[in-house]
Image (cartoon, rainbow, N blue to C red; front, top):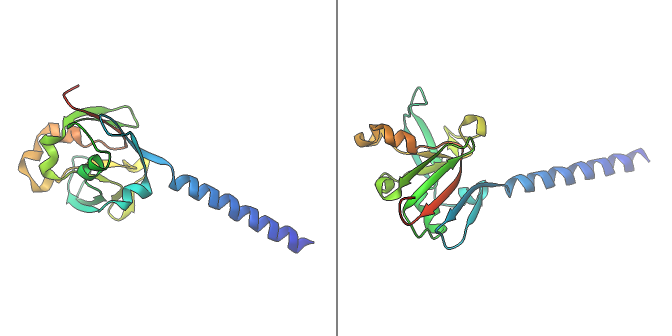
Length: 163
């Protein structure tokens, strides 16, 4: 009798754990909407399925260079079939900034989900942080480029002209 109860308990525990893991893997961490073919919602696993780029750079918010990993913003916009280049980037804390993607495209910004080999958490500026390779381009020292580096990024709204 005890063995059957124990087996049932283990089975239920594994079932609940599997459901929680599946729910987390399907959880939306980024929404791309606006002037796109169709609004897209991305889970972390979907973000990780894109080709990944590694950028090692300093930021005003770190004491030393960090290595960030993620897909290029351009790959995400292409996947959503964006029909405009003006982007409003929105964070969990309601911070938002509007940028013409053409102004930053040449720098190949990424949507970092990994910082120094560790998955980024909300507490650590994740789950996504728009990273520009500041150490590799002198023009990225201008304050406006810091403003574009949105952490806790959750929404990208696309427009064909400046909103």
